[in-house]
Image 1 (cartoon, helix red, strand yellow):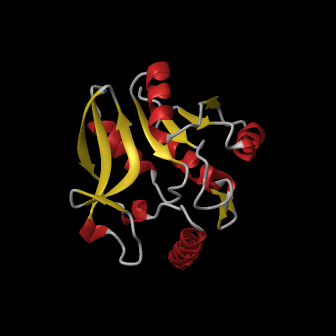
Image 2 (cartoon, one colour):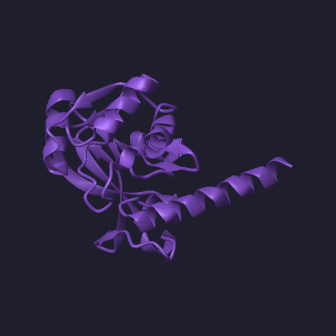
Length: 188
C-alpha cells in the first residue's frame, strides 16, 4: 500500500485566498482531488497554519489530515517523507485529476526512486501555461521517495490546469461546465 498525500498547506499567495476550499462547479477543489484519490488508496491531507479553512473543511467532512510546518513545498515534502516513508503526492489545486492518473503512477512506483508526473507539451491545452521543464509540463502528481528522480509521462491533458490565480479558477469553472454538459448529453 502506498499512501496518497494531498498537499493543502501552502500560502496561496498568487490566489490571495486559501485555494483548497475554493469551489469549482459547487465543490471544493480539495474534495474533488480527495474523491478521486480515495478510489485508489489511503489518503491523508497535509495542512499547515496557512490553511485554517481547509482544516475546518477536513473536520466537517471527516477527512484525515496531518499538520506540516507550511514553510515551503520542499520542506513539507521532506517532513512527510520522514514521517510516512515513500508516498504519492498531489497538490490540492489540480481539480481535474482522475483516479486512473493515481493508478498509473502508483503502478509505476517502486518506492525507491521518485517519479515526477509530466505531460508532453503536445497534450497541454493551448490556453494553459504550466511550468515547463526539459520539454515537459510538470503537473503536480508525483511519487516521492528517498532516491533520484525520473519523469513519469501521464496523458490526462487537464492535469496541466493547476489553479494558482483567479484567472486559472475561471478557466477551471469553464472546463467544469463543459465537462458537466458533455456528461449530461451522454446520459440522454
